[in-house]
Image 1 (cartoon, rainbow, N blue to C red):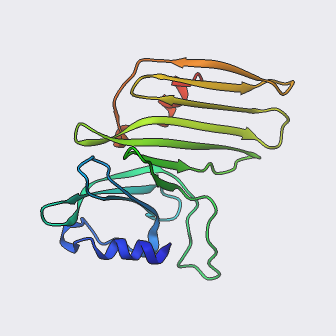
Image 2: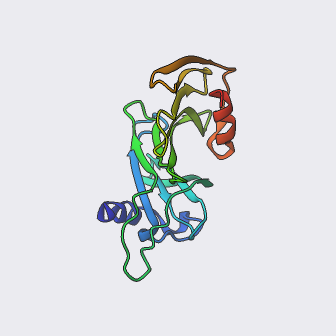
Length: 203
């Protein structure tokens, strides 16, 4: 993966970047046609510093000149375990965001939860190109308390339509399902608030 990411980095024009990106800080990347113009674009998540949230960089391909043009940086929207690549005894982290290009041109952003007292909440965002910008089109989460019996809930809904579904595990192990029906909205990824999405899910 690191070799592939380095190859991506080498095609980026140095002058077009706000500041150099250290390739060892690139956690994950995905390539796809984000804006539907038939050209392959790029998105990547880059570490910043220990204990700080990570940044997501977007690039759109300039078809006329055939290069990847920076299309924005969304700062500090996701956390993960610091990779520690420059520390003695480095070992890869198992709590890192993941990017996947979806067939419809959207981007799947998986944000694994950092365990706390035996519980964790994994989140997944669907990021789409709308009105010349990247917005959060979908949100889902999966919460599970591994230290307690039958304590888990989940939600999956479309922010653009406000429609979706959620469920909560009951003490007897069954699940109580409910419909999510809120006002649809267009939320730029840079302005997305996880707390608002959890509220929409009824949490």
